[in-house]
Length: 497
Picture 1 (cartoon, rainbow, N blue to C red):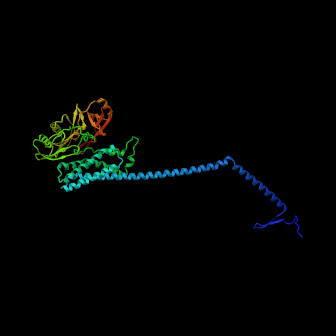
Picture 2 (cartoon, rainbow, N blue to C red):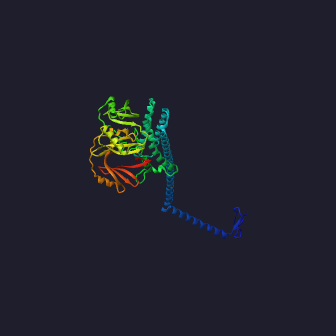
Picture 3 (cartoon, helix red, strand yellow):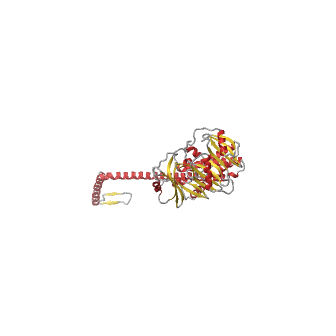
């Protein structure tokens, strides 16, 4: 028999692993109703969700999120790249600063060595020691030039100092060659080195002052070599101020304006007429009637010259006479060590009289400076009272013996010719270019050599300013200021820079 279930009987019993709970019929119906309601609500929620997902905004939001994330990734990558570049640039600047500082320290060290060796050269006892010292100075010059080539210096600012050390190197090598031939160095040879020590001292002082700033981190070469808003490279300009363009072989270092003249040179001052060795000897014998003159050698180079040893009483000289035109190119002798007997004015007269003996006309003294008992005089030819600075001759006068002991006429031999003189600007107009800071002391019309190897007709204004004496050259054609030279008085010796 089957059992019947009555309303009073318990309908079901469900066990979920917990206490069993029994439902009556009414409770069962209520539960069933509630379950259906929940199913309907769930269906509504699912439909609403589908409608939201199918709306335009629902599709746009994920796209915006993707775009934002992508941009954020790109921005992060760019920032990382810039940071890496910045780090690399900083590291490069540090390395460059290290290279510049090392080159500058090397420059200072070798200039200091050169100055010491040149200063004591006259005390070296024998030719073997002289050769060793000259070789060391030549090597130091090479190191100096190598350092200059590394530093951030513009060509126009390194020209003078580069030329100076090239000249010292050239003198050292020429004296080494002389020793290698078995010859002894003369007093004049030794003076070429010891006189160079003066300018080396000036260069050394300026370099050491700057070096101290660098060592104390008060000056940065990299930062100072960046062009400022005025287009100026401060470091390059500073190095350009170290103008040492005052020594030329043979050396006469106390020079006035344009003592080295043009860089690009052709021989314009001599004809093609050739002289013999005998002609040169007779020429010197007429110039120095009381001298004993001995032929030394023939030299080939910029000029073909006959070279002679000249002895006047107890004084020895070395003279070079050009094969072309039998022209006195150089005369080198030594000064006495006694007190001066004559003035600068008398020394100028001696130099001009000597020029007349050489048949050089209209020679004007444009610079004179005295050191102890020697006057250094620059003579320039004039044409219609216009000074021809490219044709400059340098003379050296012993103020005790009242005689000429030095003569250097290379510039004249290279450059002397007749000029076409025509000014386009009045002197009063040129003077207005200077402004009110300068007090005019003297003025001339002058041809001057330019850095590019040409020359220009200018007005030379000798002016005084609060900080010293200036030579200012204004172009007589277009009123451009071609050159400004300042007279520097150091330990009683004047130099133009």
